[in-house]
Length: 366
Image (cartoon, rainbow, N blue to C red; front, side, top):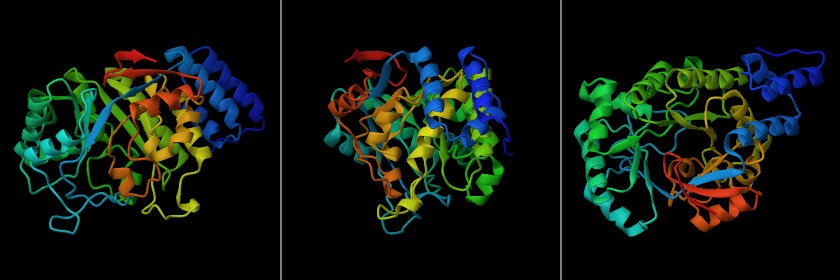
Protein backbone atom coordinates (compact mmCIF):
# COMPACT_ATOMS: atom_id res chain seq x y z
CA UNK A 1 0.00 0.00 0.00
CA UNK A 2 1.28 3.47 -0.86
CA UNK A 3 -0.12 6.79 0.28
CA UNK A 4 -0.47 9.20 -2.62
CA UNK A 5 -1.25 12.82 -1.85
CA UNK A 6 -1.03 15.91 -4.03
CA UNK A 7 -0.61 18.16 -0.99
CA UNK A 8 1.71 16.67 1.65
CA UNK A 9 1.70 19.90 3.67
CA UNK A 10 -2.08 19.74 4.01
CA UNK A 11 -1.93 16.03 4.83
CA UNK A 12 0.64 16.61 7.58
CA UNK A 13 -1.53 19.42 8.96
CA UNK A 14 -4.48 17.03 9.15
CA UNK A 15 -2.39 14.52 11.11
CA UNK A 16 -1.09 17.30 13.37
CA UNK A 17 -4.69 18.29 14.12
CA UNK A 18 -5.51 14.70 15.03
CA UNK A 19 -2.52 14.59 17.38
CA UNK A 20 -3.50 17.90 18.94
CA UNK A 21 -7.02 16.62 19.59
CA UNK A 22 -5.92 13.21 20.86
CA UNK A 23 -7.47 11.36 17.92
CA UNK A 24 -6.20 7.95 16.88
CA UNK A 25 -4.06 7.72 13.76
CA UNK A 26 -5.01 5.30 10.98
CA UNK A 27 -2.98 2.90 8.85
CA UNK A 28 -2.99 5.54 6.10
CA UNK A 29 -1.72 8.17 8.54
CA UNK A 30 1.14 5.92 9.63
CA UNK A 31 2.13 5.14 6.05
CA UNK A 32 2.07 8.81 5.12
CA UNK A 33 4.42 9.57 8.01
CA UNK A 34 6.82 6.84 6.86
CA UNK A 35 6.81 8.23 3.32
CA UNK A 36 7.21 11.84 4.45
CA UNK A 37 10.68 13.40 4.53
CA UNK A 38 9.57 15.93 7.16
CA UNK A 39 11.35 14.19 10.01
CA UNK A 40 11.42 17.25 12.27
CA UNK A 41 7.64 17.72 12.16
CA UNK A 42 7.10 14.01 12.85
CA UNK A 43 9.50 14.29 15.79
CA UNK A 44 7.76 17.39 17.11
CA UNK A 45 4.39 15.65 17.01
CA UNK A 46 5.79 12.60 18.81
CA UNK A 47 7.47 14.81 21.38
CA UNK A 48 4.13 16.53 21.99
CA UNK A 49 2.42 13.18 22.66
CA UNK A 50 5.24 12.00 24.92
CA UNK A 51 5.31 15.25 26.88
CA UNK A 52 1.58 14.96 27.38
CA UNK A 53 2.06 11.50 28.86
CA UNK A 54 5.40 11.74 30.68
CA UNK A 55 6.37 15.38 30.96
CA UNK A 56 10.12 15.92 30.81
CA UNK A 57 11.02 12.61 32.48
CA UNK A 58 13.07 9.81 30.93
CA UNK A 59 13.17 6.50 32.81
CA UNK A 60 15.84 3.85 33.31
CA UNK A 61 16.29 0.76 35.48
CA UNK A 62 19.33 -0.86 37.06
CA UNK A 63 19.09 -4.31 35.54
CA UNK A 64 21.18 -7.29 34.54
CA UNK A 65 20.79 -9.49 31.47
CA UNK A 66 21.13 -13.25 31.97
CA UNK A 67 21.33 -16.09 29.43
CA UNK A 68 21.00 -19.65 30.75
CA UNK A 69 21.41 -21.35 27.36
CA UNK A 70 22.08 -20.45 23.73
CA UNK A 71 21.04 -23.87 22.40
CA UNK A 72 17.95 -23.39 20.25
CA UNK A 73 15.77 -25.53 18.00
CA UNK A 74 14.83 -22.51 15.86
CA UNK A 75 16.86 -21.19 12.90
CA UNK A 76 15.63 -17.59 12.55
CA UNK A 77 17.52 -15.86 9.73
CA UNK A 78 18.40 -12.78 11.81
CA UNK A 79 19.74 -14.60 14.91
CA UNK A 80 23.47 -15.01 15.47
CA UNK A 81 23.16 -15.94 19.18
CA UNK A 82 21.72 -19.45 18.78
CA UNK A 83 23.76 -22.67 18.60
CA UNK A 84 22.97 -26.34 18.07
CA UNK A 85 23.63 -28.78 20.90
CA UNK A 86 27.32 -29.73 20.79
CA UNK A 87 28.26 -26.95 18.37
CA UNK A 88 31.32 -24.90 19.21
CA UNK A 89 30.28 -22.04 21.46
CA UNK A 90 27.07 -23.70 22.66
CA UNK A 91 26.38 -23.75 26.39
CA UNK A 92 23.73 -24.51 28.99
CA UNK A 93 24.25 -23.34 32.55
CA UNK A 94 22.90 -25.02 35.63
CA UNK A 95 21.07 -22.78 38.11
CA UNK A 96 24.08 -22.93 40.45
CA UNK A 97 26.43 -21.85 37.65
CA UNK A 98 24.17 -18.89 36.91
CA UNK A 99 24.07 -17.97 40.58
CA UNK A 100 27.89 -17.94 40.58
CA UNK A 101 27.88 -15.59 37.56
CA UNK A 102 25.31 -13.29 39.18
CA UNK A 103 27.30 -13.17 42.43
CA UNK A 104 30.39 -12.05 40.51
CA UNK A 105 28.57 -9.19 38.74
CA UNK A 106 25.77 -8.19 41.13
CA UNK A 107 25.43 -4.93 42.98
CA UNK A 108 22.75 -4.31 45.61
CA UNK A 109 20.98 -1.64 43.52
CA UNK A 110 20.08 -4.03 40.66
CA UNK A 111 16.30 -4.30 40.61
CA UNK A 112 15.67 -6.54 37.61
CA UNK A 113 17.00 -9.71 36.01
CA UNK A 114 16.22 -9.78 32.29
CA UNK A 115 16.43 -13.36 31.04
CA UNK A 116 16.52 -14.25 27.34
CA UNK A 117 17.76 -17.52 25.89
CA UNK A 118 17.42 -20.22 23.28
CA UNK A 119 14.60 -22.73 22.96
CA UNK A 120 16.63 -25.72 24.13
CA UNK A 121 14.64 -28.88 23.32
CA UNK A 122 17.08 -31.11 25.23
CA UNK A 123 15.84 -29.76 28.57
CA UNK A 124 12.49 -30.37 30.30
CA UNK A 125 10.19 -27.52 31.25
CA UNK A 126 11.10 -28.18 34.89
CA UNK A 127 14.65 -26.98 34.18
CA UNK A 128 13.39 -23.51 33.22
CA UNK A 129 11.06 -23.40 36.22
CA UNK A 130 13.90 -24.38 38.56
CA UNK A 131 16.18 -21.69 37.11
CA UNK A 132 13.66 -19.03 38.06
CA UNK A 133 12.88 -20.59 41.43
CA UNK A 134 16.53 -20.72 42.49
CA UNK A 135 17.28 -17.23 41.18
CA UNK A 136 14.28 -15.78 43.01
CA UNK A 137 15.21 -17.68 46.16
CA UNK A 138 18.70 -16.20 46.15
CA UNK A 139 17.57 -12.67 45.21
CA UNK A 140 13.99 -12.28 46.48
CA UNK A 141 13.93 -8.49 46.07
CA UNK A 142 14.93 -8.51 42.39
CA UNK A 143 12.15 -8.62 39.78
CA UNK A 144 12.47 -11.45 37.28
CA UNK A 145 11.62 -10.48 33.70
CA UNK A 146 11.98 -13.68 31.73
CA UNK A 147 10.85 -15.71 28.74
CA UNK A 148 9.48 -14.14 25.61
CA UNK A 149 6.05 -15.15 24.34
CA UNK A 150 7.84 -17.41 21.85
CA UNK A 151 9.54 -19.18 24.75
CA UNK A 152 6.18 -19.58 26.53
CA UNK A 153 4.75 -21.17 23.38
CA UNK A 154 7.81 -23.47 23.29
CA UNK A 155 7.31 -24.41 26.95
CA UNK A 156 3.67 -25.18 26.21
CA UNK A 157 4.69 -27.60 23.46
CA UNK A 158 7.34 -29.45 25.48
CA UNK A 159 5.22 -29.64 28.64
CA UNK A 160 1.75 -30.23 27.21
CA UNK A 161 0.44 -27.39 29.38
CA UNK A 162 -1.71 -24.48 28.20
CA UNK A 163 -0.20 -21.01 27.96
CA UNK A 164 -2.10 -20.07 31.10
CA UNK A 165 -0.78 -23.04 33.08
CA UNK A 166 2.78 -22.47 31.87
CA UNK A 167 2.55 -18.86 32.97
CA UNK A 168 1.00 -19.73 36.33
CA UNK A 169 3.73 -22.30 37.00
CA UNK A 170 6.46 -19.76 36.21
CA UNK A 171 4.73 -17.06 38.24
CA UNK A 172 4.56 -19.41 41.23
CA UNK A 173 8.33 -19.92 40.84
CA UNK A 174 9.00 -16.16 40.88
CA UNK A 175 8.34 -14.76 37.39
CA UNK A 176 6.89 -11.23 37.40
CA UNK A 177 6.82 -10.07 33.77
CA UNK A 178 7.56 -11.13 30.19
CA UNK A 179 10.06 -9.31 27.95
CA UNK A 180 8.81 -8.27 24.53
CA UNK A 181 11.04 -10.38 22.30
CA UNK A 182 9.93 -12.96 19.77
CA UNK A 183 7.47 -10.58 18.13
CA UNK A 184 9.85 -9.64 15.30
CA UNK A 185 7.26 -8.49 12.72
CA UNK A 186 3.76 -9.79 13.38
CA UNK A 187 2.86 -10.89 9.86
CA UNK A 188 3.08 -14.41 8.53
CA UNK A 189 4.68 -13.27 5.24
CA UNK A 190 7.63 -11.87 7.18
CA UNK A 191 7.86 -14.88 9.47
CA UNK A 192 7.93 -17.26 6.51
CA UNK A 193 10.52 -15.25 4.58
CA UNK A 194 12.77 -14.83 7.63
CA UNK A 195 12.40 -18.48 8.67
CA UNK A 196 10.83 -17.56 12.01
CA UNK A 197 10.00 -21.10 13.15
CA UNK A 198 8.85 -20.08 16.61
CA UNK A 199 5.43 -18.79 17.71
CA UNK A 200 3.13 -17.40 15.02
CA UNK A 201 1.85 -13.83 15.18
CA UNK A 202 -1.44 -14.92 16.75
CA UNK A 203 0.31 -17.23 19.22
CA UNK A 204 2.63 -14.42 20.31
CA UNK A 205 -0.34 -12.12 20.89
CA UNK A 206 -2.31 -14.85 22.67
CA UNK A 207 0.51 -15.52 25.14
CA UNK A 208 0.55 -11.85 26.11
CA UNK A 209 -3.25 -11.84 26.28
CA UNK A 210 -3.13 -14.74 28.74
CA UNK A 211 -0.41 -13.05 30.78
CA UNK A 212 -2.43 -9.85 30.99
CA UNK A 213 -5.55 -11.76 32.05
CA UNK A 214 -3.49 -13.27 34.88
CA UNK A 215 -2.66 -9.74 36.03
CA UNK A 216 0.86 -9.64 34.59
CA UNK A 217 2.19 -6.52 32.88
CA UNK A 218 4.42 -7.24 29.87
CA UNK A 219 6.60 -5.65 27.18
CA UNK A 220 6.37 -5.55 23.38
CA UNK A 221 9.02 -5.22 20.68
CA UNK A 222 9.35 -4.87 16.91
CA UNK A 223 12.45 -6.02 15.03
CA UNK A 224 12.61 -3.83 11.94
CA UNK A 225 14.95 -2.95 9.10
CA UNK A 226 15.14 -6.11 7.00
CA UNK A 227 12.56 -7.36 4.49
CA UNK A 228 9.36 -6.01 6.05
CA UNK A 229 7.31 -3.35 4.32
CA UNK A 230 6.32 -0.10 5.99
CA UNK A 231 2.74 -1.35 5.90
CA UNK A 232 3.82 -4.43 7.90
CA UNK A 233 5.47 -2.20 10.50
CA UNK A 234 2.29 -0.17 10.92
CA UNK A 235 0.17 -3.34 10.98
CA UNK A 236 2.44 -4.68 13.73
CA UNK A 237 1.84 -1.56 15.79
CA UNK A 238 -1.89 -1.71 15.20
CA UNK A 239 -2.10 -5.34 16.36
CA UNK A 240 -0.35 -4.33 19.58
CA UNK A 241 -2.64 -1.32 19.92
CA UNK A 242 -5.71 -3.53 19.53
CA UNK A 243 -4.51 -5.94 22.23
CA UNK A 244 -3.70 -3.01 24.52
CA UNK A 245 -7.25 -1.72 24.01
CA UNK A 246 -8.45 -5.15 25.10
CA UNK A 247 -6.21 -5.80 28.12
CA UNK A 248 -4.19 -2.66 29.00
CA UNK A 249 -1.33 -4.98 29.91
CA UNK A 250 1.65 -3.56 28.01
CA UNK A 251 4.12 -1.31 29.83
CA UNK A 252 6.30 -0.18 26.94
CA UNK A 253 7.02 -0.65 23.24
CA UNK A 254 10.60 -1.25 22.12
CA UNK A 255 11.38 -0.79 18.40
CA UNK A 256 14.62 -2.68 17.74
CA UNK A 257 16.56 -2.09 14.53
CA UNK A 258 18.03 -5.30 13.16
CA UNK A 259 21.78 -5.81 13.46
CA UNK A 260 24.17 -7.17 10.78
CA UNK A 261 26.10 -10.39 11.23
CA UNK A 262 29.39 -8.72 12.15
CA UNK A 263 30.76 -5.62 13.82
CA UNK A 264 32.84 -5.20 10.67
CA UNK A 265 29.72 -4.99 8.49
CA UNK A 266 29.63 -1.85 6.39
CA UNK A 267 27.27 1.08 6.66
CA UNK A 268 24.97 -0.30 3.97
CA UNK A 269 24.23 -3.31 6.20
CA UNK A 270 22.89 -1.14 9.02
CA UNK A 271 19.52 0.58 9.51
CA UNK A 272 19.88 4.32 8.77
CA UNK A 273 19.69 6.65 11.75
CA UNK A 274 16.96 8.54 9.88
CA UNK A 275 14.78 5.41 9.86
CA UNK A 276 15.53 4.66 13.52
CA UNK A 277 14.42 8.12 14.68
CA UNK A 278 11.40 8.08 12.40
CA UNK A 279 10.31 4.66 13.67
CA UNK A 280 10.58 5.74 17.30
CA UNK A 281 8.50 8.84 16.55
CA UNK A 282 5.87 6.99 14.51
CA UNK A 283 5.65 4.34 17.24
CA UNK A 284 4.86 7.06 19.75
CA UNK A 285 2.17 8.49 17.47
CA UNK A 286 0.53 5.19 16.51
CA UNK A 287 0.63 3.54 19.95
CA UNK A 288 -1.52 6.11 21.71
CA UNK A 289 -2.47 3.64 24.48
CA UNK A 290 1.12 2.67 25.40
CA UNK A 291 2.58 4.69 28.29
CA UNK A 292 6.19 4.45 27.09
CA UNK A 293 8.37 4.04 24.00
CA UNK A 294 11.88 2.76 24.70
CA UNK A 295 15.04 3.83 22.91
CA UNK A 296 17.19 0.70 23.03
CA UNK A 297 20.76 2.01 23.12
CA UNK A 298 22.15 -1.47 22.48
CA UNK A 299 20.77 -1.36 18.92
CA UNK A 300 20.77 2.35 18.03
CA UNK A 301 23.81 3.52 20.00
CA UNK A 302 24.07 5.99 22.87
CA UNK A 303 24.16 9.22 20.85
CA UNK A 304 21.04 8.41 18.85
CA UNK A 305 19.35 7.27 22.06
CA UNK A 306 20.01 10.72 23.48
CA UNK A 307 18.48 12.36 20.41
CA UNK A 308 15.46 10.05 20.51
CA UNK A 309 14.19 11.74 23.67
CA UNK A 310 13.15 14.63 21.42
CA UNK A 311 11.38 12.14 19.11
CA UNK A 312 8.95 10.53 21.53
CA UNK A 313 11.05 8.11 23.58
CA UNK A 314 10.61 8.19 27.36
CA UNK A 315 12.75 5.22 28.41
CA UNK A 316 16.51 4.66 28.13
CA UNK A 317 16.36 0.97 29.12
CA UNK A 318 18.91 0.07 31.81
CA UNK A 319 22.40 -0.80 32.92
CA UNK A 320 22.21 -4.37 31.44
CA UNK A 321 25.80 -5.27 32.61
CA UNK A 322 26.64 -7.55 29.63
CA UNK A 323 24.30 -7.85 26.62
CA UNK A 324 24.90 -10.81 24.29
CA UNK A 325 22.15 -11.25 21.68
CA UNK A 326 22.50 -8.00 19.70
CA UNK A 327 26.26 -8.04 20.12
CA UNK A 328 26.39 -11.55 18.67
CA UNK A 329 24.80 -9.96 15.59
CA UNK A 330 27.27 -7.10 15.27
CA UNK A 331 25.96 -4.30 17.51
CA UNK A 332 28.53 -1.52 17.92
CA UNK A 333 27.16 -0.13 21.20
CA UNK A 334 28.53 -0.75 24.71
CA UNK A 335 27.44 -4.04 26.30
CA UNK A 336 26.08 -2.03 29.23
CA UNK A 337 26.11 1.37 30.89
CA UNK A 338 26.52 2.48 34.48
CA UNK A 339 23.85 4.38 36.35
CA UNK A 340 25.97 7.53 36.20
CA UNK A 341 26.33 7.18 32.43
CA UNK A 342 22.57 6.79 32.00
CA UNK A 343 21.93 9.85 34.15
CA UNK A 344 24.47 11.82 32.10
CA UNK A 345 22.92 10.56 28.87
CA UNK A 346 19.46 11.78 29.86
CA UNK A 347 20.53 15.06 31.42
CA UNK A 348 22.64 15.80 28.36
CA UNK A 349 19.44 15.74 26.31
CA UNK A 350 17.82 18.31 28.59
CA UNK A 351 15.56 15.72 30.25
CA UNK A 352 15.00 14.64 33.85
CA UNK A 353 16.44 11.18 34.63
CA UNK A 354 14.18 8.95 36.71
CA UNK A 355 15.44 5.66 38.09
CA UNK A 356 12.52 3.21 38.08
CA UNK A 357 11.67 -0.36 38.86
CA UNK A 358 10.37 -2.78 36.23
CA UNK A 359 6.83 -1.40 36.54
CA UNK A 360 7.77 2.27 36.27
CA UNK A 361 7.43 3.02 39.94
CA UNK A 362 9.83 5.89 40.56
CA UNK A 363 12.86 5.09 42.75
CA UNK A 364 14.80 8.33 42.43
CA UNK A 365 14.49 11.52 40.40
CA UNK A 366 17.88 13.05 39.52
